[in-house]
Image (cartoon, rainbow, N blue to C red; front, side, top):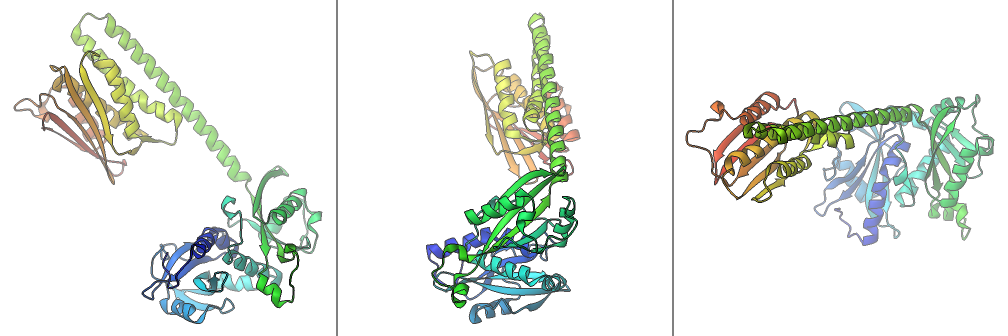
Length: 486
């Protein structure tokens, strides 16, 4: 964090606490909020920005990325030299739209200016806010100052506030002083046909009463979810405290801490559709995982039958072909096993490669030989289809290295290396064996394994493959992570 003022550990902690609370502040104020500081060379930069979930935000293109020089540098320089006044509304022009900006000082306990918070709203939204009740406007201002004093607690545990969420403001005397139009619509679903403004919170359900009491008792934000009227409701309660300095100006001194309580915001959200959709998704994901689990089991049964047939056959060539086919089937089964555990469609290629080499080691390598199969490189997540194709490629290249490169040797190493190249993936399979024969041409090779690899790489993965001698044989496969990228 950069600032023209030398910050103490306590100052840094205060500013970081404020930044952590910006999301709920932006949602409640229906404004883009940013925190600015001044660098040692005199520039004003953005150190944090939060866009509201409740309305369309003003800066969708990353204008306020952390560390970027402030939008309207002259105005922000003035704020740091003349001290910001939140009562002044500045008019800015951003991409043809009028923006209302209010600036709030962020000071430490000694009154030293540490940073400045800007609250930006489209001018029409600003005018609408001015027409809301004075009780609500005053509560919002008290809430902002409470956040800037670092007094808000428990906001990290709250779900985001949305565009279709309602707001109720309840005074410390338990009277409902404000109810937004959205909240009134939501409460009609609960049987409240008339406005509840001016009514006591004791006339509402026990849920609101409990939330209100808990927020005041704990002095922190609380959230609850419950079923009412066949719908699922999420409610949040945010306590508001007054500034001690303000109380002193009112002549209130040495009173109990309760006197600082201003009231409580109760935010109401109908989560019925969201939760129902989430339950349907979870049910479908469980079904998909079960399907992948059964496919994996069936493939393993097929592999077992083929392995039994290999043991019964007297032809060495047929036995070798069956054993190689077993590993091909098991390579596909590996991908389905991972999908049965995580059905989101993305597979960690590194984990697949480890499982494949382990299977090959157990099925094809004579324990009396000193052969090692190693996997190294990056953890690369691929869509299931491409992970399956790549699994088969790795299986064939490792089998080919064992069959041709290390066939006549009692010791040797096959190395599988995975490299994340951004949008591309490189798979390198190398061995320290005999190397490629003289005049080797991949395009005319009669090896079934290499023909399978070429088909998978060029036709399915839409990548390219190369083989060369490099203290043994080195095979390189490069392809795009996504199907569209291929």
